[in-house]
Image (tube, rainbow, N blue to C red):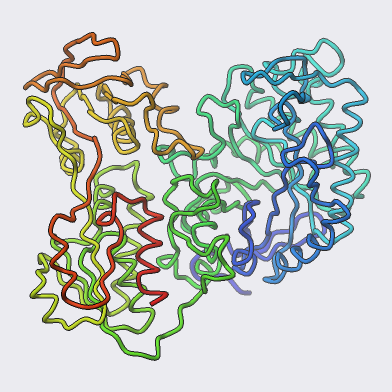
Length: 622
């Protein structure tokens, strides 16, 4: 009997109702599906934008997935989803009181209410409930008819069914409120109607948050009881366990960079004990080793790979081929929610970015100066094109600013990414010259056809009296154990606020001084916002709209927006006011070869996504 040599449980079959899954890997429901579909996962989950023909559940009004004008496109999409042999699952959900509606419109929920943004919530009467049930049924029936292998009823993350389960949101006094039996009545009615319409042999999955983490949510014990009841009644064939939701205290339904890996797997223990159906779990499962650990310890029967499968659509195939070191690591930046993965350029660009670069027919020599993420990506890409490649790095180690991740336990995802780039570059055969400040004369001696400059950035030193008593944040990472009890961080952008969270978790008293009105503002468009974490710490003081006037040996003088000054005790003062390009002397490099390109932080302080883009395109399209 065949057993996988490295991940024997992960790559073993699983029976669910009448289906047999070829392995235990589900890919989460996101729209980037072309490469993911042929990766070797067992189940491809297709996301929806709600029960879109319901005017009170609409997120994209008028664009219901199965509208007559859309069915042909959806069938073609389904062919793509199945082309790698995966089974397909359609997510069906209704946002309820969290629906997006046009201005002046209302949403539906368990009770009459008004949202924080002023949108009116109308408590659902029986006709409204019947209408929503009909829409769930209609969507599920069409999914079965056009060829989906299963449906996933999305009852997690604060959507309508979980709103009814939550006593803090469901304050009804009729048969749909009060006891758990009453609060679960409407969610059960949805499942009962869908099961009746689909029949006993069709597979129904249910995603649910084991705990939604807000005042008034259903308790973890109540969720276990609800799952136990609906599974015992044959209403679901497997349960897909998540966590949190849009009402959660941490404002997230995904694990943050500060959450432990496999962060929801421990929630499944009581669920596994209460049911006889397979249990699937999601939540920062980043590596095949972690997936195998969860399954071999009996915490779940299968895993959902979400952000990690966006960062590398070939996650499952590389795991199956026993090459986990080649999996592109997710860095947990949250940009996937903007359809802009930092480390995977092909997502949503499959039609013009090739899976594999063709070797060039014209031999070239490429010299890269700088071994940070942008420089390493450029050198890797040059080798993929078949070019002779030389990389100069001034320090003793590759990685640039990502080397800070070696010293911060909360940057382990970034460390995986840095180590991945180093490993991939090491496999290329590129000539790497460390501990060398490459002068124009050294580069000219290499006789390059193309020169790529990626010398990175340097930290800004603000003009503050006594600044010599402070230390730059990048210098602090290797000296974490020397940081004092009371820390003042000058600069509350993404870098400063993340460092503040790390120090707070280590027990330091931290004050963040930020001259702008927003803390952690650079990450403001992603689902994880450092501010949401920092405000929960009792040992963190946030001071937006404030300026540091003076730094002293054991204190700082701060002035707020009202020109009021105060002195704060400070054992350690950290500068995190930003970076500037290290480009003071790059003019002389432009006389060496006709083809010179500036990338990454040297161009301007850049994100990982910009480093990936510029490193790749500096060579791929030349």
